[in-house]
Image (cartoon, rainbow, N blue to C red):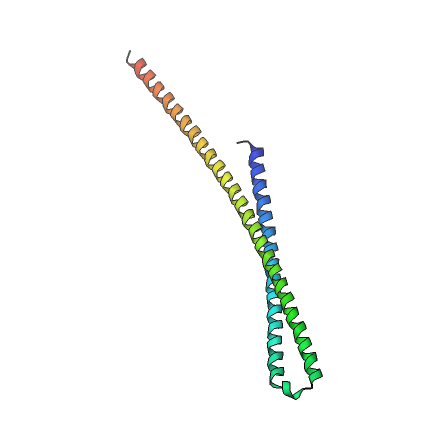
Length: 155
């Protein structure tokens, strides 16, 4: 194979590796975003549980107006938790989408590696055939010389 094609395949492999690495970095960032959203949702849920437990025991001691404000606050808190669950789902979808892109990038890189390995194997086989042919020709020349000498000495 000619040198420009070899360089083109090596360059293609290098570019595919760089693309794969960039997508892997994007996936790491997306996963970190998902983890942060998960932690935030967990904190909100924990706070809601603590608040409910705290107010549940003392409900009867508070004036109805204070309890109404508490229930409004809890409604807003639960709404915020639902919104955070939606954000968490969006992060999960982003992670899934980028993971798919990473898998595609890895498959493309592996395909290029297989093409390069196949090309290298064919080049090695061709070189071995050339070496074998040269060795066979040399052996044939030596044999002809020996036969020629034997014929010459036999006269």
